[in-house]
Length: 266
Image (cartoon, rainbow, N blue to C red; front, top):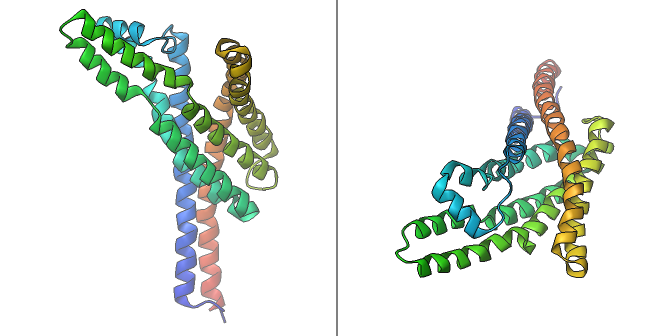
């Protein structure tokens, strides 16, 4: 006879189904995020360099609104939001291997994502653009440009840097957990360590070198690390997304077998 009551079996199956669904959602989110991040690369290659100053951006918005909006990288903002289901799916896949580290990484990532989203200046700049367009005098426009420049400075502020450090640090922890799990291949784990480790190094270089050698030197060195790490991440994300979807499908088969066995056992 089965040691589980029908209610307990139903609860177990529901929980397993929830984890299965979470893996699939996270896998799909990882694939979508990959496409969005590739879109960022295309924008950069096409000549729409990252936002330099409020005055140049406001002037661009008045002449070419589409080009101005591209400089705000809204696709990257959506990609960051998609990290929530990705991390929860990774927790679901790794919870049996090392639940403590998986939970810690997920919590750290959630904090980092919240910081990045909260410190994003896109909508603030759009507000400044509307004010700039309706300004009656050159003096008012100058005041708006000055206020907008203070927001542009936040792009290299502590908030985005620490948010990125938390997210990439969480991915490093996740990659280490992958090495101890049979759910992911060693190739995915080591690629994650290198890709996200370089991103962590980029942030640390900026945080440490900027006060000593200046922001220009720090961002130049950091940009090299970020370019290599970011390129590797464009390979890592689809591999992880594909694997999470596979794990979700496997959970369906596993649940079906468990249900059949429980019926015969009872």
